[in-house]
Amino acid sequence: MAIVSSMLVERTERGDRLFMTMLQRHCDHVLDTDALATLPAAERPEPLRPSDDDELAHPPTDEPLWSESWYADFVDAPQGLGGWFRLGRIADQHTAWVHALLCGPDMPTVAVVDVDVPLPDDPWAVRTDAIELGHAVTTPLQTYRVDLRARGQAYADAGALLRGEPGDPVEVTMRLVWTTDGSPYRYRVTSRYEIPCTVSGTVTVDGTVHRFDSVPGQRDHSWGVRDWWSMDWMWSAVHLDDGTHLHGVRIQIPGAPAFSVGYVQDAHGLLTELQTVSIRDSFGPNGLPLHATLSLDPGELTADIEVRAHAPVRLAAVDGRVSQFPRAWVAVSTHDGRSGVGWLEWNRNQG
Image 1 (cartoon, rainbow, N blue to C red):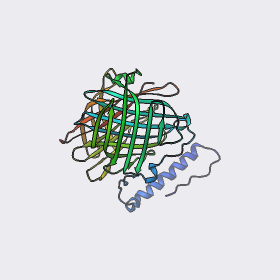
Image 2: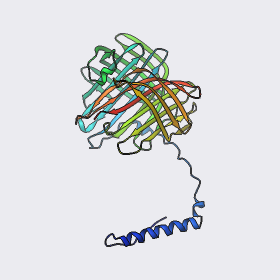
Image 3: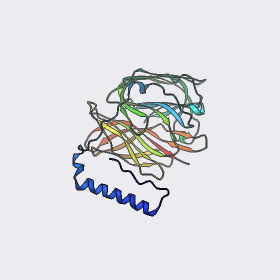
Image 4: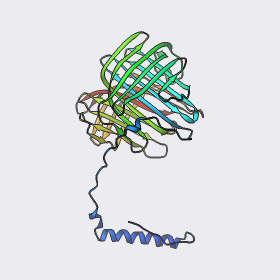
């Protein structure tokens, strides 16, 4: 359908009335002839899936906040240990960010954090005085590994990370492999994808070795302009005991309605995209989450969130803006009787 307005030398009230009258008559004609009946029934589009090439590193643009990141997490509830890893490359600022954090109900939060790494030429490796990191996609959309040896800091009070305080020295190694355990999902609104996984390997903290065998986890890969200080969000990746994987994001941009992204997928990888993600949450005076209730639709799924351990970070922009980034591994109980574990994060801008 095409609508062509009259050629106008300048905008006039009469010209506006002419165009709107023509538009109204055209719409009346469509309705009077029941032309809408010829359209196919409305259907939801098929979920998008990343390609093998999406797993590669991507050439940056010249925009100041263009970045590329690789993220991966895990939770071993019986051992009481969870962790997450992220490498971010901000090309225009010639800087890389390295985050690797571990936490549990009965242990300090252990953090390897360096947001001032000179940008390496190789997107798959980082070498500094305190960090040796290699990561790789060994089989596209199937397996991903992280090998890390670093000097980090331990925090009895995880809130100290949000305050920018130092911790106690600690040695950390990670030798972990993420294996796809569901359907990879690519976002429609931006260049990013999420993959539910199982995780195997070892983590060592000051000589104490923790071994993992197919524990729940998640990984993602993102590239494009990312202004972390221009919006707030809640991100979640949860894995239920019946094999269901949940991923929901609620994004709030100032002056605009909140919008949602995510999926519910069953144990066979059948994926339903979410239209609405809602969160009711509360935070302590130290900036850490206390509890939350997560609701996802379609599916009318509601889950109570029990925070088990904290692994937050503080993010500072080059212009001085600060965002608190609480992250927690959680136990989940759905209102239909299922249970599981996963990670939640909040981006909470402080100005």
